[in-house]
Length: 393
Image 1 (cartoon, rainbow, N blue to C red):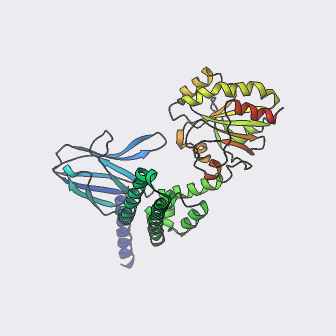
Image 2: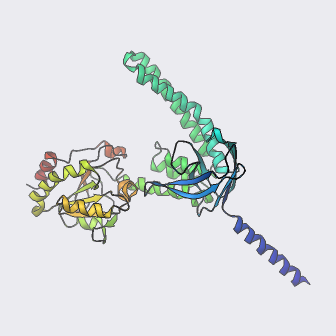
Image 3: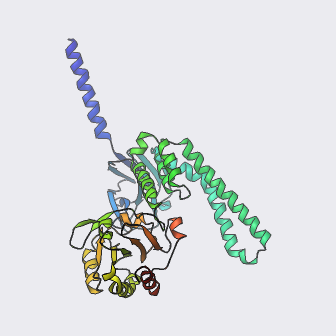
């Protein structure tokens, strides 16, 4: 009898486990007064690699109700609900997690709605509520400075500048208080990653305080990746060693950037793309330098930032423009490792390195790495020719 009871209990536990696994995922249940039957609603998220929106789920309204269901492999995802397949400004932002979430509102007032059931989204809205008054005050002060700055005397400018700093400090304090009190929040990981004022050491310090669950979430993983990237970026300065990375040649072979550098005394890293008109306009100047100094040990490594699906355009541009040097690409555009690694904010951009990968000069306008931005040297046109000539007389 004892064994029979134990078997029944075990069977019951298995059923409960199955039910738990079945329930895992998200369910977004919405009610919008005045929403016509048959209206299609779309739950989408941003696909940065392919520069488009991915549809997670489609719902069809019935009796003013709609529902999305699905499952996130990793917790945490910025999503948007649209009452149109065509992207518009009328969308509802939602920090999505595996939970049952309810949305209520009025169709004519969309995207204003009440969201319940998501702890992560509640945390996000709580932070926005506490920081918005300061953000709006700062915005007003900045507008005042832009509009009246030219008519202000030095004392008035200082007074306004002091006010802006005080408000900015208040925003920083609100942010830090939230981070300190919400180590188990998905939004905390996102907030730490996107706070540009934090150094990688500060971000790592805050990352170590997060709960195990948050570290395993998509936001936690993205934060860890951002910290690792910032550590590598610390060497993107003249005198620093360029971090190695791999990409594919036009022939489809994966190669190491450092292996290419070893072939010559000096190499110009050229960031470009087939769709970038200024990049292609600069090609003849690069070709002139390459032809003049290649036999002495100068090389060019052109790294394409073309997007997925643009392999043909990349190869055709190489041939058409007579770019007879080394080429690699991961065809991921701005989501490529190398774009992020060098903190690029536009192309063309250039980096001059020696055979060991030591950075000699940077020409990266708008670089997001502050140290690199402060150490710019022109590496295009006649300036490039003169630079290489001075290294290889």
